[in-house]
Image: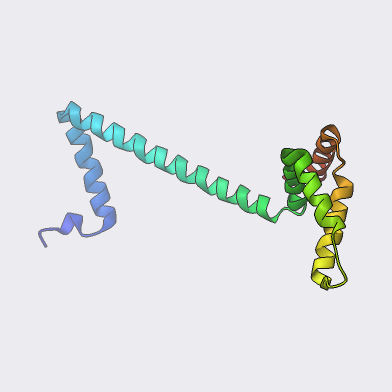
Length: 137
């Protein structure tokens, strides 16, 4: 078989390795291009590892038990008085026609309202307490 030395991936890899050594010795341009290609391969591997670590961290964050409470506290802090006023209006509104689900949402809004005082410094304290409670991330 005329292609015998190149009939498998291993033999092809070995042959290319031998050839690249010869080509690097004969041609400086090839050596430079090969060095660049190797650096690009390493950078690609580093990027892949970084991306995978990011995905793992994101999954851990999404599954963290206290995440919703921290996000709610951050939103209340960012929204300021307007967010607290809107939450107060929703929590205090209600009618006899409310379903059990709506009553549950309004009671949750009451709990949030109790946690978020009307002053910004106190909201910052609540946010820090919620963050400290979520030590897993």
